[in-house]
Length: 76
Picture 1 (tube, rainbow, N blue to C red):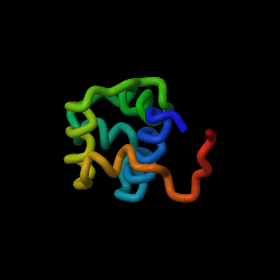
Picture 2 (picture 1 turned 180 degrees about the vertical axis):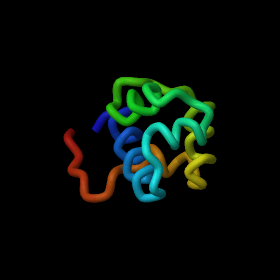
Picture 3 (picture 1 turned 30 degrees about the vertical axis):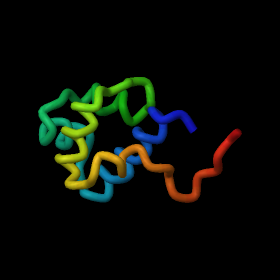
């Protein structure tokens, strides 16, 4: 799976688990809602600074945002 899609899926999962809407999470991070949406859809390519900002807002290590999604199958 493409790293942008993986990042987006992990972000969405963690955001929803913590009870944030896209809009409230974007406000919490200091980012725009459409930017968060783009990341979650895998169409944005955020910088490492933005990934760190998102990870801090979620209180998770930045690496957790790009780890393989549990249960996903890999394509060679």
